[in-house]
Image (tube, rainbow, N blue to C red; front, side, top):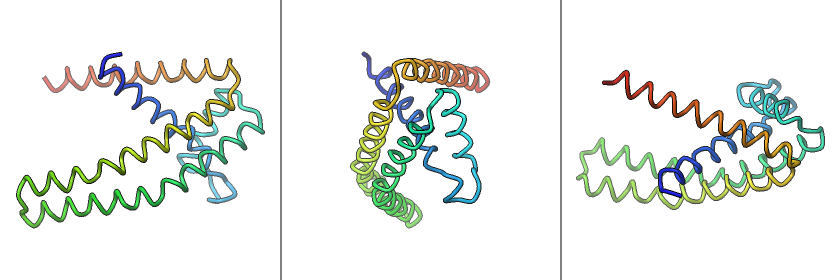
Length: 155
C-alpha cells in the first residue's frame, strides 16, 4: 500500500470513527440531539444497529472521548504556544520546534481513535461491517470528487 493510500485510509478511519463517536452525544446529556447526535443516529439507522449495539457504541465512544480530553487540552496548549510564537515574531526555526511538539499528542489522539473504532467494529455483524465499508468507500469517492473539483476550479 503506498503512503498516500495509507494516509487516505487513516483519514477515512478517523472520519468513520468521528462519525461513530457521535453516538456519544445522547439526548439525555445535552437536552437535544445537535449535529453529532443526528449523524450518529443516521449511522445507526444506516447500519441497522440494535438497541444493544447503539448502547455499546455510545459507551465505547464516550470512553474514547473522555480519554482524549487531556490530550486535546495539551494539544490546544501546544497550538496556543505556536500562535503566540508567531505573533511575537519568533524565528521560523523556533516556531517549527514548537509545532513539532504537537506530534506526540496527534499520535496519541490517532491511537485513541483507532482503538475506539476497532472496539466499535468488533460489535458489528459481518453484514454491518460490509455496510460500513460501503459507506466508507462512498465517502472516499465523494472526498476525491471534491478534491478534483477544487483543483480544477483553482486552475
